[in-house]
Image (cartoon, rainbow, N blue to C red; front, side, top):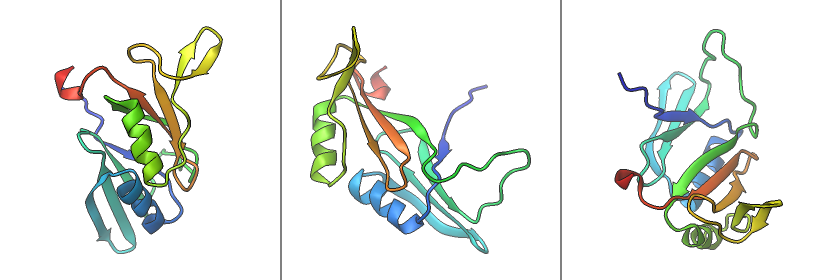
Length: 143
């Protein structure tokens, strides 16, 4: 049996602002924007080429024994691209505040590209949820 990660909830304060950020600035595809039950709205978005989506939720009851993530508390969610510099340029052109490209070196984080699997950039959504983008040597379908 496969266990696949397919949807990750992202806690936000303003659904429409977050939808504009993820779809308009980051370039995610909007798969769903619907009131699935009275007072329960779900916006599901998927990065191009990804097998996993993010879900913005409003009014969704918390599952039993689950904890609620406050907006801005999700950090370290990671996406991969095959060209970190092109990804940074695209995000910058779309008005996203992104870090410089960095890699892990002998003294910790250092600016510039590193070797294979060792080039990263970071950015935050409007609520402060933190994302990491890592350069991969090939597309996911080829790995």
